Length: 134
Image 1 (cartoon, one colour):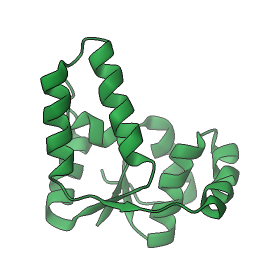
Image 2: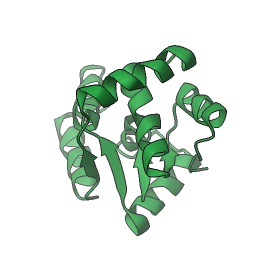
Image 3: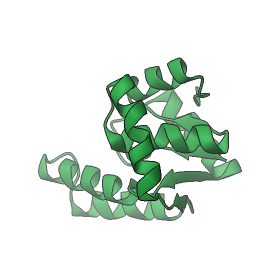
Image 4: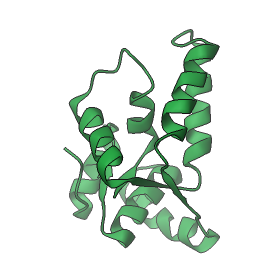
């Protein structure tokens, strides 16, 4: 199993995103399974809506992306307030949002690799010793 952040999952939804890391991450999710923190579905919905507003995808593209991601069976992990607040230390030290820091926290806690195409998240993982899907 791997931790899947919204950046890599959204890359799977857009035909113009040709990224080898995203492709390898999708292969691993299909083979091993994936998990994401509780805010992931809202990040996905927001990313799809933003792409729709900008004309990158139409309503059918949003629906296709939703079906793709929904069909992967990604485990959604609850995030307690105490966990979210403890992630603020990582957010501060790494210059990340609290949302992104929780992905690192989940990967560290479960001793899993993290899949991202976000350079800041990837760099923070390297500094924190969290294995990246590469």
